[in-house]
Amino acid sequence: MTGTSSELEQRPQGLEAGLSPKARLWALIRPHGLTMVLAMVSMALAGGSTAGMAYLIKPLLDDVFANKESGRLMFLTLLTMGVFSATGVFTFFQSFLMNKVGYTIVNDLRVRLFSHIQRQSLEYYDEHPSGELISRVVNDVTLIQSSVTQVVTGLVMDNCKVLGLVIVLFSHDWRLALVGLCLMPAACLPISRFGRRLRKLATVSQEIMGSLIIVLTETFQGVRVVQSYNMGEFEIGRFSAECRRNVDNLMRAVTVRSLSSSVMEIFGGVCLSAVIWYGGHSVIRGHSTQGTFFSFMTAILLLYEPLKRLSRIHNEVQQGLSAASRIFETLDSVPSVVGRPDGLRPGRAKGAIEFRDVSFSYAGGREALADICLSIAPGEVLALVGHSGGGKTSLANLVPRFYDPSRGTVLMDGVDIREMDLAALRDQVALVSQEVTLFEASVRHNIAYGRPGAGFPEIEAAARAALADGFISELAGGYEENIGERGSRLSGGQRQRLAIARAILKDAPILILDEATSALDTESEKFVQAALENLMAGRTTLVIAHRLSTVVRADRIVVLKEGRIVEEGRHGDLMGLGGEYHRLYSLQFLDSPANGGQGPRGPSAVGRASGRP
Image 1 (tube, rainbow, N blue to C red):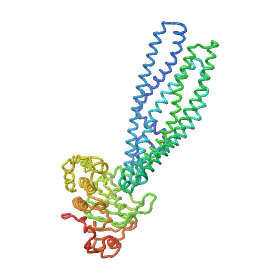
Image 2 (image 1 turned 180 degrees about the vertical axis):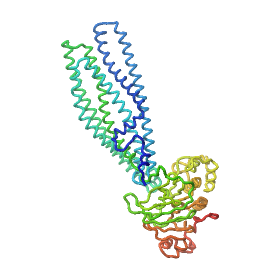
Image 3 (image 1 turned 135 degrees about the vertical axis):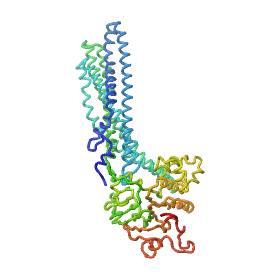
Image 4 (image 1 turned 45 degrees about the vertical axis):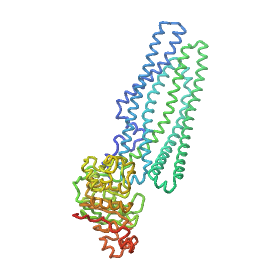
């Protein structure tokens, strides 16, 4: 369910879709108007001071050196000191203020971008690799910072320098000024073409950087698989290929930038040569003084650098606009699952769940669920079984609104969950999955992740209930021990028990167990199953399992096949039917003296805990 008002709430203010990237960049700068004005004033004064340096050459040569006016020497000396000092002071202030604006904008934009991505539904993450998203948050935003600070600084200060120096040129000799500047406009056409080419290359570079980060993320996170299959050399080759592609693209960009700079050098050399020839003849013929000529030459030479920077600014603008386009494309994405701004905020749910004529399809994929009608009573343990791809996880994902159904309605305690506040809905659900997500932080932080304000006694009680207190106490730092990236310093069973402790501390009335024990050895599974009994007590529980020994004691078993419910009932009843469940169970557990007809691990504890209502 998507609501327009909610979409607008989730978009960063001032980043309206439909505007050009340039307009949206200016919208980012606008809140810093006062700082920008002070910075621009400093730039203008610094630029004017540069022109003053060139102007002082004429009286210094003509009045002091040529006419021997010693009285003017002290005045010009002090004036020169004052001009250089003013240039230094104003340059410092413009640099400080512009960088403050640039870094603040980058920080705000990076936080906004991360926040917007965090609000996306799982469908968005299905379509966008994590490396691509990381590249946009880290690399693309940095390019925008360069555009904001260097480009604005260059446009203001360098334009002020150019304006001041041009005034000096024309005040000395307007004919000579025309000679010196006549070829400059001709340089604009190739510079413009170079800029457009650089924008395309910048877009490719950002895409390659995203690919590099994807390779790094996949390889580092899957290092055990890479090493166990001896694919290290393959991954090195894959990374090297992307790096070579990146170097080739960067060299193409370097070629374009170098050509742009060379064009300015050539045009600048031609203009300077014309000034020397024409100005030299003027001095020889007595139409101009040496002071005027050298002041003019100084102004031309000082003018050359800001003009070159202005030509580079065009290239930087194009690269910044390329990055901005990718960022604003992300910010314009609308979550497929959006909570209502005025959504219901119920208290603790009783735990009744109903799927009413529910169908669901992933974006661009086949139908994963079709015409599901299912009611789950408060406190009931419902097992979802079936072949892989049958729709078990898809069905469970609809409860916390990771996805919304294509058709039909999911209700909680008789209320359409799309009418509920999204955060309030997810407060009612705890999830323990096969792939445990832990953070590089302390044990305490990981257990309290769902309730950051929980006190230590509550954290400790949750750990005891999850049978995790024993191994935690053996860690060197106890509850303050850092468990490493993704819990790498713990065993699989220990990680799973921390996830269970986290769910216990959250104390949600609805629990989803998605293959929570499938990857564990027998000893670890025994501890985890006991911890799950404590977690399941008094909660509505959806158990997703391929291994049917884990669900034989569930209150009810629902068999899914190709997205449809084909059977439901208790274990004994379904075995008596001789249908799909019986076939699945028989494939897994053939009766033999070795297992006593109970499967390789015997009956599981998952089901009703003793004393449960």
